[in-house]
Image (cartoon, rainbow, N blue to C red; front, side, top):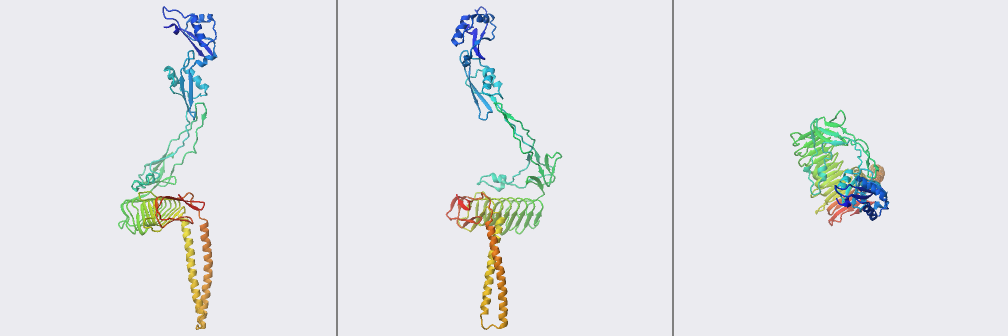
Amino acid sequence: MKRSELFTIFYKDGWAWLTVTPPPPGGHMVYPEEILGRLKLLGIPPVRKQQLYTIIESAAGTPQRLVPWPEGEQHGPRITLTVSKDAMSAILTIDEGKSGGEPLSVAFLTKALKKAGVIFGIKEDNLQTAVENTLFGQPIVAAEGTYPVHQISSKPEYFFETDRGKPFKELSYNRMDLRELNFIQNKKKGELLARLSDPVHPADGQDVYGNVISAKTDSGAAALRGGKGTERSLDGNEIRAAVDGNVKLKGGTVIVEPLITVENVDYSNGNMDFNGAIDIRGRVADGFTIRAEGDIQIGKSVSRVHITSGGDMILKAGISGNDEGTLVCGGDLYARYIENAEVECRGNLYVEEAVMHSKIKADGDIILAGKRAEIFGGTVVAGGSIICKKLGNINEPFTELHVGMLPETYRALLHGEGEVKETASRLDELENKIRQLGNSLQKNKLDKETAVKISLAKAQLEQEYQALNDLYTVSIKHLHDVQRNLVLQRDAVLKVEQNIFGKVSVFFGMHKWVSSGKGNLKTTLTLKNGVIIEK
């Protein structure tokens, strides 16, 4: 052992400390002069030689306090501390100190952390590793806070697809395929349909500075509601099917509706009227009527048929109505195409390919999202927005769109306009008859009896004319009231991804936009402050 290793001088807690180690066998003790020389070199205030003799003679190998030395703190290891913005972690880096500095220890590092205000989540194992391996210049995770555990009350978990249009809606415009969509989810009696998840109880967190981070509480457990065709467990935490049938989530309530599945609808089984859901895997023959209180799903194309559903409807192969086919849907309607048909939909209308020469009314949005995604010919009314790729076509059939107007409002407008037009036509007819009778009375060869009859008829027609004219005035006022009080859905838009052809008219209420026929590209129309804005 070298003589310089027989003693160490270091700083700690504002003092200079001395440790003297016994010499090896046959070796010599350290001299006080050697220690005094080292003290002077380090700039430590003078120490009595007798004090050094006492420590040398004991050579206990334990630190002995010598003299106050506050300047010695500058000799210790340098600590660089970085605390994250959210105060959830503290990283320290240690730079080796000067000779005589305080020895690196867990206590030294902990003191440095607390001096910087880091008092919570100190990782003593990491600090110990840093000390034992003298990890100078390396980042060390010195402290970590605990994140709060936010309360999560029991929530329903469903074991069926609650958004049955989801596969169709999530595909990109060029990939929409109704074959990906299946409304009918047949469940057997006793199958688990829904259950309440276990709650997560709240626990406050704490950052490295010791600040408490309060856990959030939610609004309470969501209800697990079961309707017709279901049964709840005794503890109320599960819902199972009470009957075989089509499961769906309707207004937050799980229901299982009776289900009929048939291959075709034709003369072999006749018209269908059912209080549940109907799944027709094949075709529906012309002239047949289908009505269901629930959903209707049809696998092949239909034509001159009349179909009414209380729930959603999906036509996987569309409808060619030949101006006779009608669809009435109480929910969302999905179809590959709609041609020469009349459609009323209380929800949204999703079409994969085209709407052609049809009368369409939907309370919600109308979205075409396949490779073609085109609308041409006929009248289309949407309570919400209309989105397609092409509007009109190269043959320029008359195409009329009403955006942001509920079909009910549109019908009121049509009724008002029709009433005014019909009354005006009748007034013109009466006026012509009165004129003809007046001309007859001016003839000199009329006998008295004939003249009296014509006069009476003319007077009666004039009374009818006055009454009808009063009705005409009321009809015009009513129509003006309907037009003035039109309420359109805010933010409703017409969005055309590619071309708009000629003879296309777009209405936002009474505001009209007409296509220039120049094949506008990527046109979006909105109504702002009574003006149709084109982007």
